Image (cartoon, rainbow, N blue to C red):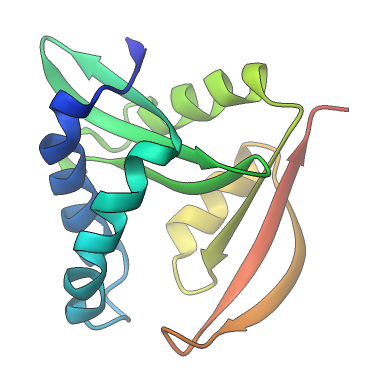
Length: 142
């Protein structure tokens, strides 16, 4: 079930955030994610967060910030491939006129996932914090 996030779940959501980022981005030193943990934890409550939860287990979440920007979509490793990410994306497609995101080109699984879910590449750019190239992608409901 997809639910709105509440602060009592912050630590569970942050555990998914750190674990999934380190796993999915093996081309970025894990210290980058560790060093950004506190900042993300502080900023997360100001985003629209939707969690996918079953049997009191948060299996994944998506965060939408100003400008309909997907700041992140994360599914616990053991639940990936079960359609949770697609369910979260579909839920947001119904709530927002368009969705925009940045994704590292080297994160092939994520790029393929967003392509399959109707996102189109707008441009590519260099991320100075990570020294990696990213795509900016857009889904438009129009």
